[in-house]
Image (cartoon, rainbow, N blue to C red; front, top):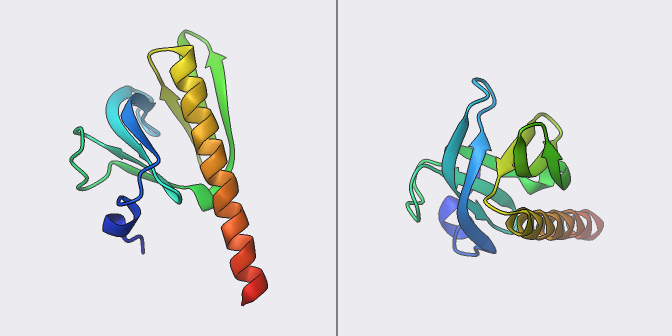
Length: 119
C-alpha cells in the first residue's frame, strides 16, 4: 500500500498536463505530481486527495517524449501493464517531464536493486 502523505512530501516536479484516459481515450487536464516512486494525477491543483491515477515508477519500463498523430508534446509512459500518454503545452515542457520521470525511474530501479542485494 502506498503511503501518499510520505511520498507526496518529496515532490520532484508538479504541474498541469493533459492525460489520456485509458478507457474512453479522452484527454483530461490533470495536476500531475512526480515523486521518487510514483507519478500521481489529481483533478485539482495542489489538492493531494484521491488521485485519479497512480503510476508506479517501479513498474515503469520506459518514458519517452514523442509526437503522435494530431497531439504534440507528448510523453509516453510504458509500464508492465499499461501505456499512459501525457500532453504538455510545449515540446520543452514535455522533454523536461520525460527527463525527470526517466531519472526518477532509474533511481527507483537502483534503490530496489540495492534493497535486493542487502536483504
